[in-house]
Image (cartoon, rainbow, N blue to C red):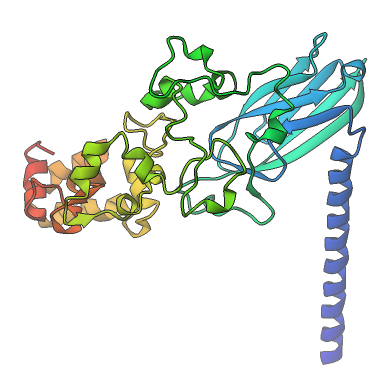
Amino acid sequence: MQKKIIAELLLIILLFASYSTAIYASEVVKEQSDTAVSPDILSIIQPFDKGVYEEEYIDVSIGIDLDRVDTIKLYSSENERAVIRTEEDRDVYHYLFRFSFGEHSIRAEAFKDGKLVAKRKVKIFRRAFLSKYYRVVPPGFEKKFFHNEKNEKRCDLCHDMSVNEEPGVAFYDISESNCFECHQSLLYKKYAHAPTVNFICLPCHNGKTGVKNRKYSGRSKFLYPDPIGDTCFKCHKKNNKKWNSKRYIHDPVGAGKCNLCHNPHSSDVNKNFLREKVWALCTSCHADKSSKRKYIEIFKKKYLQGEKIDRKFAEGSFVCITCHDPHSSDRPYLLREKYRGIENVCITLSEGGG
């Protein structure tokens, strides 16, 4: 009986191994079929295969052989597609795709007189600063940079790749910025940071690195120092002085990780350019505090005005930063200055002053 069981287990293992090998082989063949046809007819210039990106919109740049292509079809794993008819004397085309966080693919197909003549595929990873699921980059993916001498040569026949901004001077017409044509999607959000609105890029994208990204030094002329805090505080001097004068400083502030919570370009959340709404933002790190219901029940049971506070929770006007200063404070638990203790928080909220 025991020998029979062992034999059956070995058979199952062999079958599973054979199935896995077949699946892997089919994936390899599929991958090769996506990339192996006429490499000089069609190329995906940008984004780079296995590249890591952070912004929501990604510009897909396609290069073709004009004599052998009259139609380009683009597909994204987000179920977006585009059909581009080629033009005379133009061999590079662009299309803007929008991506959620995580791993994605972009597929390009080239046609001539209705016949498929070439196809390409790249994989990308859109990294999240906050989400625990998408913060860590998968094996095989890495941050890749476009703005260096080698890559820019592919574009400088049609585009002026030089920097034409004057230090501290806003453009009268931002479309005159050499950065605008490719990076205008930074303005697609509801709220945009002043340097972004005016396409004043160099104060941040100065080509320098910090202790967290020194390994990328020299790979792009528009790198920014990481951590970014010192760069932010060159403009936000008053905030720097105020926050660093307090007894307790929130870790992201002390570490100069402003861009952990704030998108330095633009945001749909609020005028402070938060990456997420407050509750989701805070609990992405403070996961043990993620249950609103837990706090509602505490207030309802312990305080006379608990029902009023419950309503504030429900309508969203009572969130983490109602009581806590997200940057720094002289009070324990980063409580806001007007509160001497948690009881004061509850009284203020119940009276409508929160």
